[in-house]
Length: 264
Image (cartoon, rainbow, N blue to C red; front, top):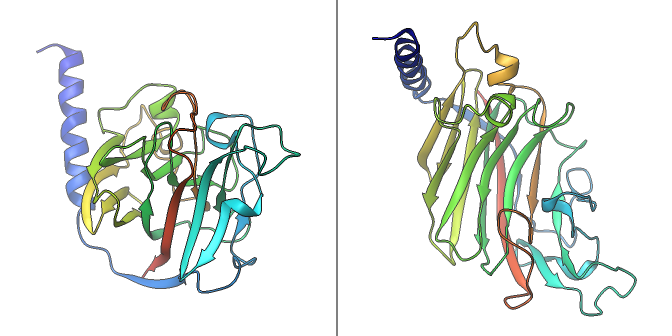
């Protein structure tokens, strides 16, 4: 057996052992729940995501037509800008909220119950980014990304290890998981010192372990465990889903609640 193959086998075994060690149940206590039973978003927790220049935030807007709190739900929309926001030159508009600078999670569990609308080039997401640091150096945690009219979602981990070094299989950094299309689903992630544990509707979907490797130190392979904020947003168009089209718009994402837990 060659040295390269042997190293690969050792790495796979290490990943398996780490994942098994991480599989033990963790006890939590809830520290925050938002059921959106207000007339407006809680300003101490949420802010509207501003427009940017990359695929996911290219059409973000603070237009009030994109946001609604109704019946204990937060509704975010993707729409065609056919005169709804006449001063905005963007052809499409999307709504998104985040906890940046207001509520951060370092270690614990995050769950979001949401119902996802579907449509061509539509891309709703629930995810987390670090309060400080650049991408992908400081990491990214995707609880849910839904494309077009799929009946499944993606859950993914991003870092230098996965994006620059292209190490995406050992350990695997992404998984697809079936959902109840058109109905509410619960998307979750546990952020632990030694792993990330993803789930859908209470069922574990993927464990991403921290490797004990001299070749790839934690800041490269597992840059998690620093303060992260939460993003929930409608997105439309981009290199992953194709150019935005208006045929299925407007499309909504309904958030029933978000719960955040800390370890006991």
